[in-house]
Length: 180
Image (tube, rainbow, N blue to C red; front, side):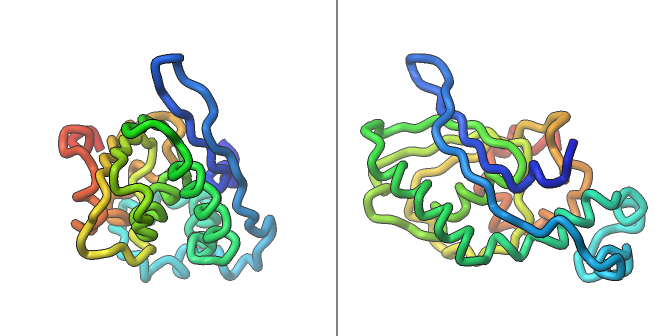
């Protein structure tokens, strides 16, 4: 799997008519990096175990190296468009599925706490547990459930040290995390 697909956000909606594309966008990240930025030693501050560091492929290092783009103006624009789409949706309960970095769109929804979403319940299956790089509000006023669905399209499934922070994990259904 190409590492750049992590930054392609596709959200699929499930409803009585079946499943269909709901939102798609792409966060532009660089293609090339200085090799010294991708050395394994550059990722020591991610607090991974020695076993995880040994499994850190070049593609995974590129994904981690680009995670700061989730705190960029471009991502704010993309997530703002996603939030507008949610606010305009007539359904009060929304069921989604996403892969890769798409889970960060859901975190942006929580971070934004848009008043137009307070009456909606959002349930999303995701192949990734997000790395805790966003400051989320301590009190969640939105009704959101995230269900972890590990699979072949999961990039960071074998790296629990990257996402082992309680405030992010409390968003997930505990039954789905047991498979992590």
